[in-house]
Amino acid sequence: MTLTEPAPAKLNLALHVRRRREDGYHELETLFAFVADGDTVTLSEGEGFEVDGPFASELAGKGDNLVTRAAERFAEAFDVEARGRITLTKRLPVASGLGGGSADAAATLRLLARRHGIALADPRLFACADALGSDVPACLYSRTAIGRGRGERLEPVEGAPGMPVLLVNPGVAVSTAEVFRRWDGIDRGALGASDLLATARAGRNDLEPPARAIAPVIGDVLALLAAQPGVALVRMSGSGATCFALFDKPAARGAAAAAVRAGHPGWWRLETALS
Image 1: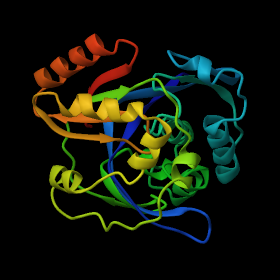
Image 2: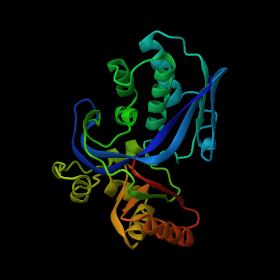
Image 3: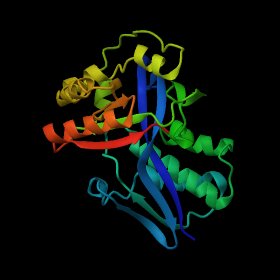
Image 4: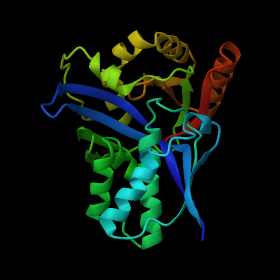
């Protein structure tokens, strides 16, 4: 039997860094959202792990990754044999702020849960996700939510399904650890409480300044997106370098994508929508 599970891209509509914790992590408040597109994880007969897709070359040959670690942790938590061949179809850029690795790990957990009849609400599944990384619990459920703590304390909120989104990455990978290391340590306040778009607009991404210092081209992406007609919100996601724009209508998203393609044909872009 072959089973396939989507691994949708994660967006941080807002990302507030409040403080550095004693355990080395940072206390966050973030507004998670997910889009309709991303990577795919497939479980089939056989054994082993393989990667295909447009960004496969960036992961090829790396036997230890979040997907294989997710499979191993699931096997330990549920006392089952880790059998089957896992194929990751990598459509999202690596180290891009879209939670690609976390989404892939979460999809692997969901896939194995389906195979073994484990409910998504099983607390052991959440524990597996939490142990794999700060974004993996949010990606496990892939629904709009406010994340606190490291991002693992989740409060579901009403989303805006179908809202047009354009993702743009200028072709640079930014180290999450380095971006956090360069954060200036200033707490600029909590995330607000309103409807989704109002909360996002009133918020910010505290990791944008250090990410732009590492990769100034991020500023060029944000400026180009902000200049497009019909744009409702422009922001960098996560620790970068992918930026996104929300639009009122699909036609405006399409026109913006055409403008990006014309001006910067080497930049990666994806027309999608909030899920």
